Length: 513
Image (cartoon, rainbow, N blue to C red; front, side, top):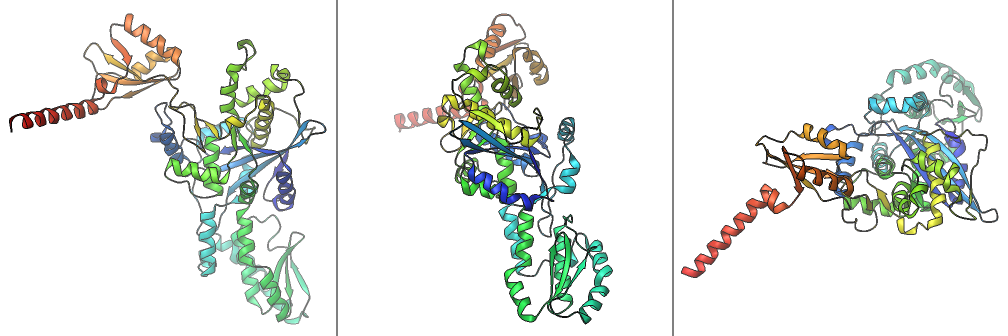
């Protein structure tokens, strides 16, 4: 497993590009700075796909990825084997004038990642920058109009200290130096300097300090060179400081753009949030409308597979005693690697990691999780997965999955139920939720303008039947029945009665006019 950060990204990028180009498919995973920071935008079993997208969009608008896992799986037909090249990228939002960002860091998420030994120092000190196309266009526009200025530099004092420390040395050297000679300034910008804003203005300041003075980095050191006017003109045309800076700030976004360009199948586990996160951070601000998002993602990444959605579909095909016990990534991975899943089919392909020395079971490391996701995907290939393309799992929504490239399925959840108080007391939502929790996952929502009734959503039909049976025969405080809009919705009843009244008036008018 290869760890990629701001110090080695440039060196490793050509290899990453080659591995992605050679891959049969790629699997992804991401660790977030927060999951659901907005209390009023919590996911609900009542959510339609459009409502769930709207909530996720709101929650993730100020959330950033801290770590991205990417595994490129190549296939060797002679050996009938897949080889996964695993990369773990530490990433952080690019920092520069006009594109600075604020984002949520949720304590629950921090505690969760700390539990799995996430190294926050690597995110903070060595994170590869990234920005989306909106930010890139904004910064290019500001650079083209000379609105980017050292006056607005967020690290202005640090920049001034660097310049003041070297300015006299450079000027004295320049006065005596023949054309073509160089001067190394080891204390200016080392290879480890990740502040692109400081680096940009150091280059810009020294180049403008003396006529025909060129600057560049070599072997991790800052170098100034006295050149002829002709050479300066050639260098300035060939190496645009603004373009180089933007390329550095794009960082990991270039990997995402490569995935978009290659159109390789992309595999994730419970990947809906990951898709929103990576599109919003590496491509463009998420559309407000759910259908616009579906069009966008289908254009960018037209071949997406969600192993969690697939696992729900395939599990019932097996005898009950041979099914995996849970649809979590670690459970399914171990099922196929060490359990019964190894012998589901004859001549199934071997699946290996390119680093055999790596210890397994580093779950919630994005690189490792991306490998496990790809491993499960290959293992499930035995059933043929084309029909599951672009079906993305929805956690406890009105439907179990969405279709990115076609209409979403009808809801496969049990019909909504209504609970009514039989003792002329308002329904206490918290009390009823606790009462029904013994029947599995339920969610209670008040009906508008009705104190004595509430709406119930249940995750499966068996639990719904048990609730109906019990509360229609054994309970004297509440009655529970199937929800009927005409009977239980105050708004629809008002509309119905109004229509009836209008119709009756029309009949009378025509009768007696």
